[in-house]
Image (cartoon, rainbow, N blue to C red; front, side, top):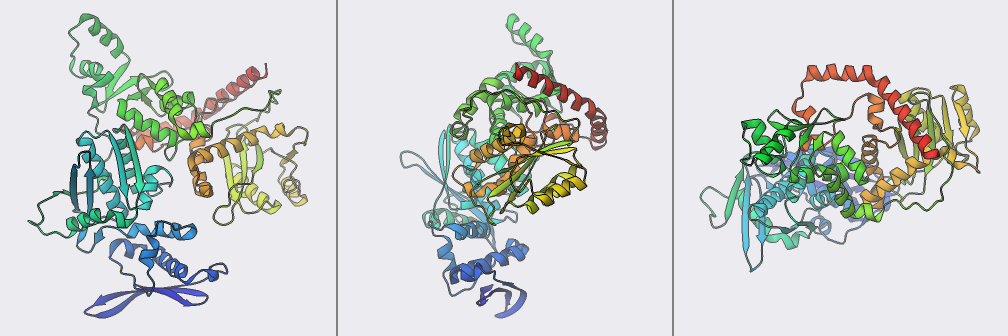
Length: 586
């Protein structure tokens, strides 16, 4: 591939195939530079051309070896550890295609160093077509498995893949479904170690591992048998479940499992009587142990390692919410899981969470009288507010307009570059009216974008009551203010120092909020809106009861039943909310 700026105001790239020393053109790409891009340095324009080409013809990059020809040292520059700004973002994006895959196959190299100068070298060959990111994850899985089998308790992992280290470390969000499954498996394996740390290192410091990966991917049968070698026939992420459930023979479930499965009781009569009494609350379905619950019909029983994975995913996973200990335990039960020490384990987990301790709630305002506001039906009354200023993100986005339904507590939010009445009107139309119908009223503050004449006329024409809070009593829009605090607090806990990444992280925050039971209603906004709780990633990694026993026709029947019962669910939530507010007002 030849890349470069074709003129001062354009980029171009040409993909050619060499056949018997003849170059056959395959694809040509060109793009006009924007005003800001015209001021880029030449090397930045070259990298941008390569990024544009990789996005446009992604299947070629994934399925073939692509050699980039240029007069500039693009490879050396992208591997510099001190890259900043857009160059580091482009470097991470292009790292997907820079790994141990080649035309002869793909492989991975692992070096495990221990005390007393002990060193193990492992070369792995993949008998399947692997992308470079997939090869990096397979290598990490193989290394963790090797360390676990050797009984390692404290492990530090070094990788030259910036994308993988940041995804596993939690700094970057994992969006591709295949990589999400790999990430779940990594999370499970790391729970076996007392301490685990992953660190990014430059490619130059990883030369020996690269040599092992090339050795594995290019070797012929019978060659290089002086080091440990392994072949992986199929991708590890193709397994249907992350965990092999062989833990019933040990731990707190052992006696219950033996009695229900095989009728075996402990020799001690007192212990045997205890097991009999306890087993009345348990049952076995689909070869899994479940506890009969009070709020949920069946709760899947977990051992220590499985419980650690579930807490990780619920607290800081893709759909995770950095909530308190009791709220976290409620989510565990609501998702269909059980183990005897749930409450104390969740409390200990939250206390050890650095983000929760660093950005926890600090109540500094004095107590005031409660201003109770009730909505007649779902999506009848909305509160709206602007959250600003936030760190400037891509596209100059630095404001967040937030709307919350007073009944279901459902939140809609959209990042904005500017606060104008036109943007507010567009948000109201697109995010509220077109999705949930015409509300009875919208409560907003007296900001100039909300009291604009055109916006007021827009609401009046649609028959929406426009309620404006006074400067003396801004707490009348407290629901929207509370939603702002929830979003801001969760973004701080998720992003840490990477504050400019709040825009891509926003959908995950909203998803986690919508699936968290609210204190006032004791229900999730998702269930009050759709009648059923959503399927979340933890139920895939550790299959829940509804996933283990899924039947399409039966599922459709149950969804219809839930829709018939949704009015009762909403009425119970309304009563619960009123009782909660009356109790708080005393």
